[in-house]
Image 1 (cartoon, rainbow, N blue to C red):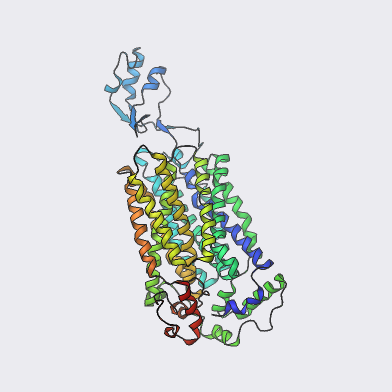
Image 2: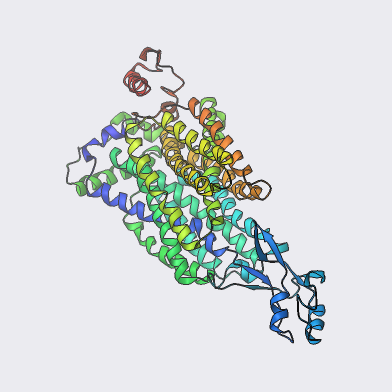
Length: 556
């Protein structure tokens, strides 16, 4: 099927079929912005202190029973201890005045044996306030957040194989339905453990939906819309969901109704089953040529063009019927030496890029100000990165583009430790610029990887790379936690790993100006390891001379 784009060139680059499919797939991507980040509000920890039971305490002693502590140079109420209640009650009953008759700091302290009192100024209810995930149970909050990424990891590993076996369209809507139901069920979680277990399912369905939708758009859309979809389309609409999320959270302010509202909104996507087509490329690899032709003819009708009597060449049909029905899995990728090497390099890129992106995204919650506005601004800051990367991907080779973005992102993070403490605004500006670069890297690495793998391996390869990305995502919260030891340590670790991955990128093949590979053999032809000085005579087949010429020219 190496000539698929040539055989379907009569469809044109636009037309109602491509435009409608483009819009529908982008609409589905909006839902992933909801599912991926609602924990920012669901797992938020509001200001709190030990609960003081109603009793015979004067107002003075009720205000003095919570000790003060200094945090980042400012005095705050202790969140995990109070002065012993029995002692304070005795002083209050005797009419003693704190600070005058009694030195309060001499009173022994005790833990919050009666629970906690939480501020409701911002959140009415979160899983933290409902299940008291503070103090000794504080570790449960980041662990709950990590279960989403564990689900991402599992979904990334199995979604590619399921999609390659059963089809892109089927898995998109199975994942969509599973995401809706799991979020709805999660809103009724009776305990922290049940919440975490269901959150794994949410993550598995969410990443499966994201990856498979991405691959489906890559294979169905025309060349011009494919570039827009894999850069600006997918990520921008994810960002739209991200920006809408704080609006719903602000309106609800209670984690259970919030999840119910979000799952209800995503339910409207399910009827799109009757409007979104299956991938003709995938159908051809399965030998289902008649079904592929039916979709292409329907596209021609909707685009207002006439399809030729025979769309796919006879030789192509014979290959589809006989030799290209093999299903590939992760073991096949590991068996083929050249594919294995490329995959290993891609895994390192995805891991470092996602670690940086999610690390900086999670760190924005530590900024002062309104959390709803901060979340919106964090999402809004990604929009220009998507536009810039979309424009550059149309005209620039992938390797130097990704390398530059990685160097900029890692470099800015390493510079933060050199900024004086009194220039806090400059440090924040460098962090935002770093996130801008990581967002662009995130965009490029998705498109780049989809172009490297052939159709028969694309979903499996994307799934494996996304699995590596999830390892980076799972570790990101704990890397940010290292900031409690040294505030510069997270920046040093993320920045150093990012600069290292920019070197790894140099050994990957260039894909700019080349058609999408369809088979494993196509993937191994005209690799980026070929140097500019080699002539087109070194290509595996004489018929590939034009492709090598394009590749070599793109390196200049």
